Length: 325
Image (tube, rainbow, N blue to C red; front, top):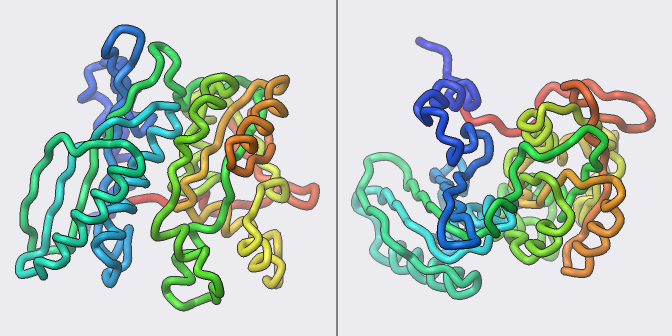
């Protein structure tokens, strides 16, 4: 039996198919940027979800629809783009309950109204496998001002917008592995909020950004790699929600617990590179817009990624989630 293909090795093998077209951003950014109407660039991103991998099999189909839209919009949030529409692909298991499709439509309608986006087209098929859905989202960003992963400079400050760890803990709560008395952790996993509200602060202050879907260490590392710089992350400076902080305090090793949360993924926070003289203003601007923000490290010369806690560098076996095929 052949070895599974690593996600990033697979992406590397596809890069030649872009024919060097700059609009594809070398397949580094979870999006494409295409010059559109005068003064604006069209930003396009695609996200897919598979039942049993990205959502639990028993999940309500209305929640599946909303989770799909929200996780896809998070990529546009990281680009400081204003969404306006999406294309949809659904692969429904044969013999399903018609009520599931009705619930799915209700979920799309609810979040379409909340985020001001219209369904523009797509495709529907049946499958003998698990339910699979995909959304291609479109948004506008000021021409030449789209935030890319490749904009960080050595010396920039690493700022995290949003809490880290609630996604990982939310999945554990849904599985019944940890308590979740008020349901906040499970709700974060099921219905994350894309940080589209931070668009003005990002455009004004940030040099690069990514959303935290694979894990904070992995996604911050994607910025460093695309920018050709190194990165130092100070684990103890990362903001946690009250529920995540309580969970960490209850573990035998709070440092190991924080590392688990920083590699867990599904947070849909934003990680940003900001010029050091702008870092404090950016944090204040983000918090004024209703999201928590924290300085959690810095970008450095060279290509190393270092994780620091308790004044020492940690050995990190895995930076976050990696898809394989």
